[in-house]
Image (cartoon, rainbow, N blue to C red; front, side, top):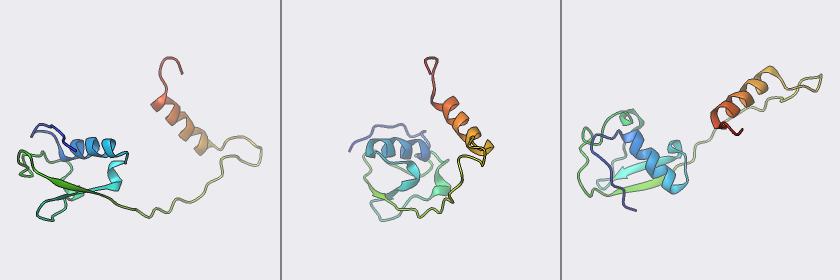
Length: 102
């Protein structure tokens, strides 16, 4: 896959573009340079120029598995209504993903 990008782009922006093309979320993507060194998360805010990327540099992308422990939480209370926390999350999602048509 070829990606044209400017050297003043942050590594996070670049990683996000690669992730989108691969159908992944950026946190599940590890990019490794040809010399075998992976770019670390602490470098996400640096530009590609700061990281010393060159034109036509080749990277290898790896899907990483992150074991996440997300505890189950009740969506409804004893009264059968949404809990306050669930309602807040659903409203945030609505505000984030809705447009003028709903």
